[in-house]
Image (cartoon, rainbow, N blue to C red):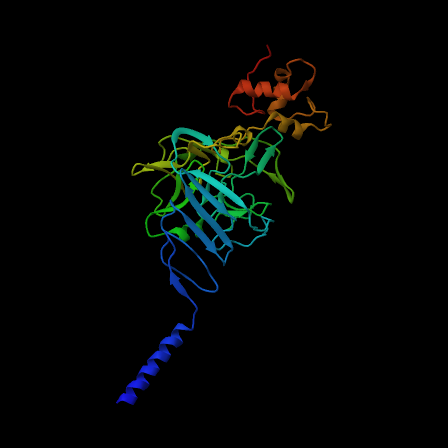
Length: 380
């Protein structure tokens, strides 16, 4: 019996150590972090509370993001490599390759709500160090003076977005233009609201899986104006017909209507007494402004537009586009469309040319009306 007992013990020990040796994995915890596992192929440190200190390190994707709260400042040091699967880059619509960055972001721990919308080209940063940059630099320019800023999420121009509604800048910076699908899956802990980032004013950014919070933007009625319109980038030239109903191809197709939905003009809302921003599946996808105090290096929205409202060409853009003989001013033979019809009204000194200063004066007098549209401005 004793010999049989020894044999059984040896067999059980052999099976135990044999199973454990199949995969080299250790489970342990770090200060402030939940239990997790490391193996030789994949490392991912995480926590359910991203309001405190945390570190994301994913050897599969190369992610290295560390966040430290020091007093009233949240400091994020990141290489801005996503901690999830992406599309293939370069691709037909995006010729750039994802590359590591070296960036430090700082956010106030105690944000201060002002209620005054401030436009931001880059409103916030995801928890993994990837920036949200909802608008694009792509513009359709018309010979009749209009220009339209192209939305990233549309069907007219291929900008190479992947399934995370993201693509890559020439610097190699991967960035989100809309709902970051894979990021949401990574940070989903089972609740409807998934914490996915921080805006630059310090308020958190969330995604609602049920979509219960609706934006307050709606498509404009009527049709767009503009003739002989083109889109150009270093790789292609396209003739674009901008006429037709506002369908969401351009930011100017939408208008903000207070109370139309649940969210404010920055896609924000107060939930359980706490203000936050929502990333939504509908326009504006990611808010284009912030409602809290922020030290911004941005000097204002591109071409004076805010939250996707209609792009207004600057006088310098108009001259550059129409100045065929490159003399820095426009003759009546060079201008087109409504600008040609209003030529004598804009030509304040009756010298037969339109200068940048004359165009700027008319632009200022019109307030929100874009240059290149008909106007009743009279010479004094």
